[in-house]
Length: 138
Image (cartoon, rainbow, N blue to C red; front, side, top):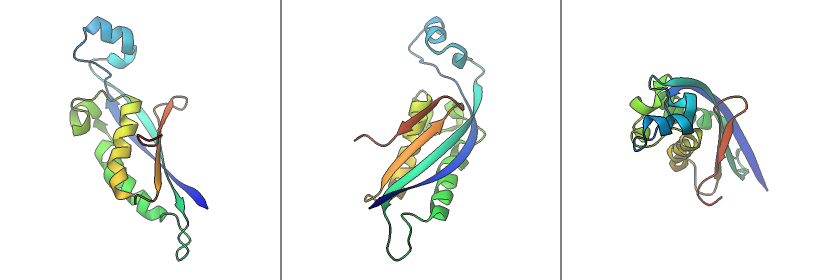
């Protein structure tokens, strides 16, 4: 029997969607307001889920306090109140779309979750726009 355990978190961050290989006009056509050279921000909502078997000794799939602390140290401390394009090394050469942010979050958390457990990242850029990433095999 497998159970999914989820933890909700949030962070506020600025970004600009922009492809340096394109003209400003093409960037503006593709990314619209998100191409603002002065950046723009979001109040991101994050749901991190770990799925696995229940440990018979603890009754946990994962201790939620451990998951909470991991999200804080790896994601919130790294992204909160930051300009993703400028201050977060992972986005130096990667367009910080919601899709790419979700993959980066997954990649930062995956090494800390044992391989017998599945990891899922759901990232809300707005209350109506969100992405889900479960790793390359999904």
